[in-house]
Image 1 (cartoon, helix red, strand yellow):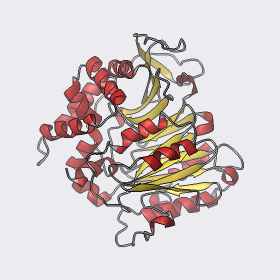
Image 2 (image 1 turned 90 degrees about the vertical axis):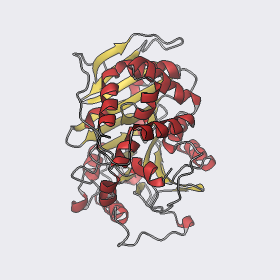
Image 3 (image 1 turned 30 degrees about the vertical axis):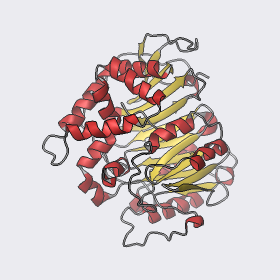
Length: 415
């Protein structure tokens, strides 16, 4: 398996359009979100606060709230988003027509390979989703890896544009003692906006409830927060470690799902990075209500990098910790502007020192690259997230589809 095939998740993705399922509803008390529909299966041992899987809307963003065993949560997911999941799968397959060198058999092979390395409980989610959505397991495996397939089909575009990701955390003197705030740009290209999904998992096996922001049918974490207020987001790190795929290892985003389900603090999160080597190189930013750190996660180990200034952390797509002994990318090779994007965010942090509220962070991470920021337009930044771990609250923006919308996760974390 070629590395370029797998790096697509952090290079580019494009999806076909479809309409999302709907339904009239009313705002749920204290949630701020609109109730769309429920799946009326009460999981054994589920809390009384929510007796079924329930779908909400935050503006145009789907927010399925699930609880029970992992298989039960998968069944709730599949039933609540049945229309979206089936149309999404059909769009992925239709997009293969006329694309040389990529066919349905390739998709199935990759889906199988990744699925086989999943922990059983996450397989159970996919299994349950496959059943209740009517997709069947083979199609559900394909849909789970949709970002990689479509990205690979358009890898030439990706190489020209080199879309990546940026992250910035502020606390202490940079928020004037206010709660830590994290801003994140997810740069994958012009994605299928209709499938942007904030999925809330409430397992009854003792794992920590976790919210993951991905696309419908994707069972992993590239941006997420748990009920303990631990937040993380993933960036591409291959600039600093271009090692080939280590095929026998699980795919890193599913490892991040597991990390969040087990971590009650940033320090605990760090132990999992130290004990796990990924399939490819990544740069993952983690935060709790007190501080943030960057985990420069190579295929041979991790370095936990602290803040750039007291209360300010910025990360883009190259390792910064001096322990690596790696020079900055040279201007002629810095095709994705990782150095300049980092410099821009550090400068914006200084300009807004003491004023970095969630609202200010939204403006900072939405500042276009050409105007001294890191936002990549048009059609490069897929979505943006601002998170406040102490409040269990996130704000999400999907450019050209959904302006900033607030999602207070507290009512949906059930433990």
